[in-house]
Image (cartoon, rainbow over all chains, first blue to last red; front, side):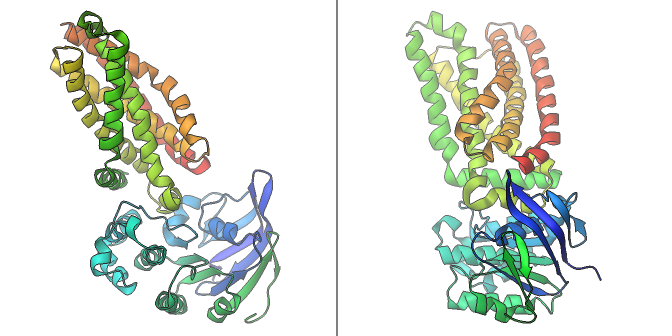
Length: 218
Length: 222
């Protein structure tokens, strides 16, 4: 079985500056991988590359069987990215954002309500414009989009940031439960011990390269 | 493509209905522009009436820059532009949807503005069929050009100043055609205006076709 993510000497540039400088790694289907590294190591760039948002300048990369050099657009419906930004429309309500994301990705829009309920966004909050939500509630809404879409590959960049204890617990359950649903999770976090406790494997990134892959949990 | 276009147009119009930016900012801006033209040219209706068509379309052209900027501003907030790319929507559908939403807003603006021009400049709106058809064709052209260049400008830090620089020269043929068509219709020669209308339709078709092809790469690269 081909890995869900396979990178070989992947180079991603921003102008002349390398965001990734020859990263090589394999992440198997159904695996939970924790990418750790200092600020500027290339963690966010790695996730954005895997989401098909950044072009691959050199090297080779395959995500869910899609060649990152040529098939980035077709990959995107199969991945979900929870990043530093929520990708939400401020003027639309939680429910409208969820339904829009579901319809855009070709999924059943009726999944919106159960996903919102799971993230404690049902009732009044469901019909509240995102602009009026707190930072934590926005984070939950972004997470609810991911839960509703349930993509094959979950790319999570500092996913616990801004979540309260209940939200963190729920997120942990979602990550842990991804294995049984056959989903692959790539998780970047500065909360090393917590993230490592959720992950099957820890991958260390520095200077845009994979520098060490410790066996088991770091 | 059409499903995606309806989805994006519906989303953009819903956001507009809720935020009322076009109603509260673009319409007053256009009204101020025609009022200022009136002040600059003086109260003499013998001077204002012959210039009315040109002044109307200059006001529409400037307003369409604002409408386009607004259309991409909603995608800039909280990474929604990346969200748009991640959604997997057909870029041609995104282009058509955004252009349709901008066109819808401009049509409403033109309806209000034509009443304002008629009242302020003492104009009699004759040749209604040509006037309306001109509005439709010119609006499609303006919206298509605006959204195409909006995709380029929205990814850059200098988007506020770059968009008018890119947009206005390319939209100049629409301004010329629409002004001539309106001029002919308002002076009782709607048949002569039909020729300019045909030209506007050709421009609209070209701009839409270019937008459908170019929008995807522009959204990726800008």
